Image (cartoon, rainbow, N blue to C red; front, side):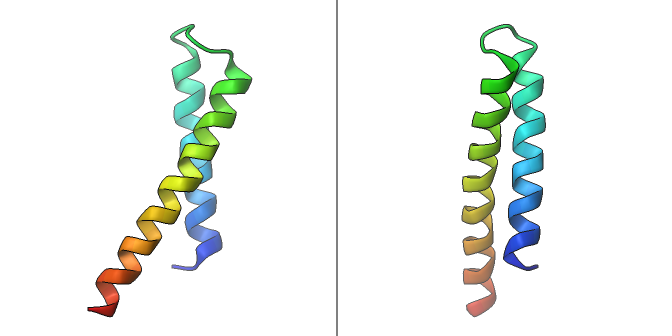
Length: 57
C-alpha cells in the first residue's frame, strides 16, 4: 500500500470515530472530528512503518 492510501484511510477512520465520540457530549463535534483525524493520521503512520519493517525482515 502507498503512503497516501494509508493516510487517507487513517484520517477517515479517525474522523468517524471522533464524530461518534462527540455523541457522548464530552466534546464538540468539530473538535472531536479534528482530534480524531489527527489521531488517525498518527496511527496510520505507525501502522505503515510497522508493516514496512515486517516486510524488510
